[in-house]
Image 1 (cartoon, rainbow, N blue to C red):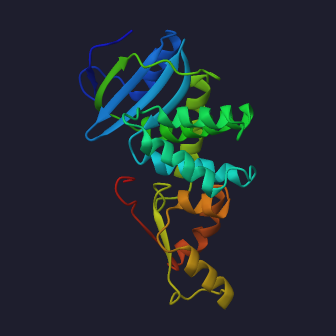
Image 2 (tube, one colour):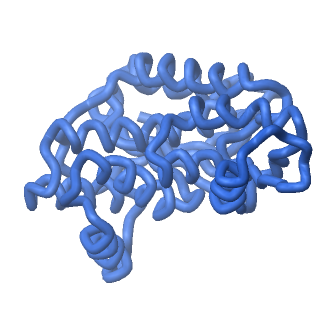
Length: 250
């Protein structure tokens, strides 16, 4: 198990994020793989080579809320009041750890607000989103450290998650040069010359007003890639202008 902090970069020892993760999982290691890049950190939790959770410090509360809200469309018990209650549990913690999201999900499981299958669905979705940015890392400091005992409900095969995540990244890359991030923000301009009914223009104007593609997809209960593809004709015509992600999503 690695304990000393080391650097990985494009020069010297050419170790990439994906390669490092594959090394850890194939060796059957257990622990928390922590990567620091400037002011942000990624945490990948492993047990016997399997991934049990992953998170990062880029608005973890926002990410957690989005995934809970998405599931709430099929699990009505995950209403706003319950989601606020979970958030308050975080805030009440004197020393919250990076794995508090996982612990909160396990609390929902213990209280029978969600089923084991829904727990696994949420955990996998959160891991995939974290890996999506993790795989882009080209430099940083990393170390493998132990972490406090947590209940292990399921282990995920890292190689399968990496492959699934890379397919998602390829889907985003296929959308064209104007779309570079799910956190870009589309805005609708009524003055553009497009053949849309007044009702459609009003709907787009109220919908496309600063939310990112990823946030919009959750609010509208749509697949984010499908959502972006439906807007591409309007983006090409200039009726929808796509702005850069806001910090820290940039």
